[in-house]
Image 1 (tube, rainbow, N blue to C red):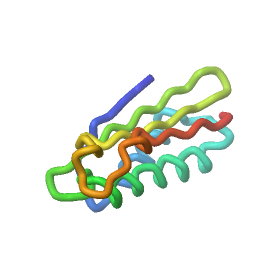
Image 2: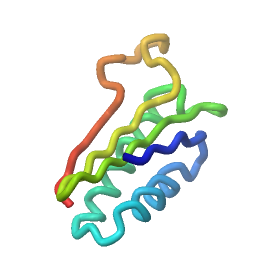
Image 3: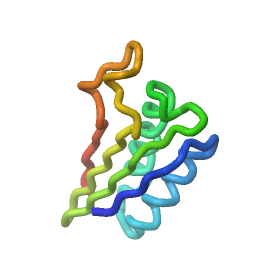
Image 4: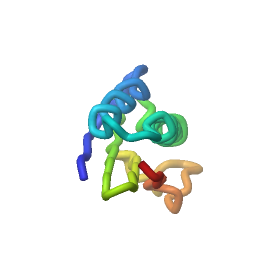
Length: 97
């Protein structure tokens, strides 16, 4: 498992695609993994304080044999955010690679 704590930036999606792309070089379904990771990052940026100046989020990428799991967790506590649903964080996806 590799994890990165990333600060908010306008190009956060691009940065996570590069991070995961380097880790998963040779994966035949890399485009699908990168699309899923990008969507999770966008959700964190749009729906939590991670998307505000000074916000951040953690991305974890786990490769185990032929499976890849990607998890995105906002650094802020969603339960303290107005209207946030703490039961949806962290957001995860698992794909075959």
